[in-house]
Image (cartoon, rainbow, N blue to C red):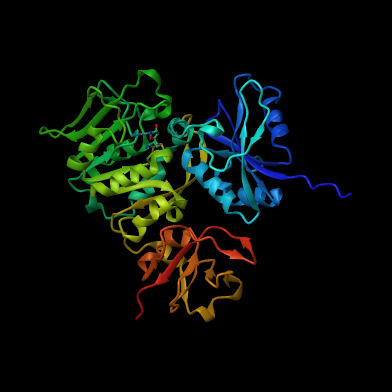
Length: 442
Ligand SMILES: C[S@@+](CC[C@H](N)C(=O)[O-])C[C@H]1O[C@@H](n2cnc3c(N)ncnc32)[C@H](O)[C@@H]1O
């Protein structure tokens, strides 16, 4: 009798003491794999691994490989199965696995803390709770996540701001509303513990002709550059007094959390600020974008490169409420100022002049695009690569996020749907792309 083929599973697992990471792997035995994690030598007893997501697939090796390729920027170490974790990313991982042609069905498991043996439970409508998690927990974890504790390098801010017309800043109130605190004591600024955004605007206050700089300090779990318990929540303003001297005012309003959505921060945003400039927390980016765009204020912020193909943000690009800034951001710093590989990009609603990256768009007749950079998917949608764009093509076609960041929407093309387009070629799922269409024909 033919031996029954072993089932194949993909899982996302997380250790209770490492909320900023998860592992994505493959196995033929979910129970045994979880026990292996929990019996790892050198692991503390309290650090319990739990599955966040498990599913059956047809080809676990292929799914694992495709996940590695798709999310390579989010892997802690290119050789390992460890991925960064927060609520948005978790959703992306699960979505990608579920959309894979090899996906069979989600498996719901249960394991108690003392005895991490997995029982597969038959459920058709699972809840996060049934998988040992509440939505609140996921969000709380994400909020406290170390993933938010990435700091912007001074040179990245300098490089981006130098590209804009200096007049933009004249007599303006700049608001840095995400942990862009100035570490000030007795009128002296400790540059080592001041965020690069605040420092940049302080150093360039007169040069840019700023009227005022307002920075907040958030009461999160982790302080900017490990400022520690000395730090309290505060608001700090930096402006030139009537006597021509710089005045720094530090206040700790009662009940103020320092959060960008605290009523006081919202009041400053809506009433006092002219330009908002920061690198908001990754785990709250969607809320941050919503609040900022709704305020109607000018902004220049850093966010993930993939926002252009993420449903939470695409509508803003379609409605022309936001566009890419000039530069990508490939490095952040951690709390100990070590460099961390980043997948960031500047986004703004400030005017962009002669975007240098237009040069990377090769807009030519379809017939002249080399064969290897154009193909049709299973739906007969044209996919173009390597910056090639057909100039007189009337139907929608798919491009990579990079093309949008290089300014395609400013060249007479529009996004035609507010969610990513996932092409299939010969039944195989390809990377998520963006559907665009030419609107302006000369
Ligand atoms: C990506 S870091 C950037 C920090 C700083 N803006 C910079 O660019 O170096 C995001 C910061 O936002 C802080 N943060 C988290 N939640 C926040 C909230 N609700 N309001 C304001 N800041 C928040 C985090 O503690 C973290 O320091």
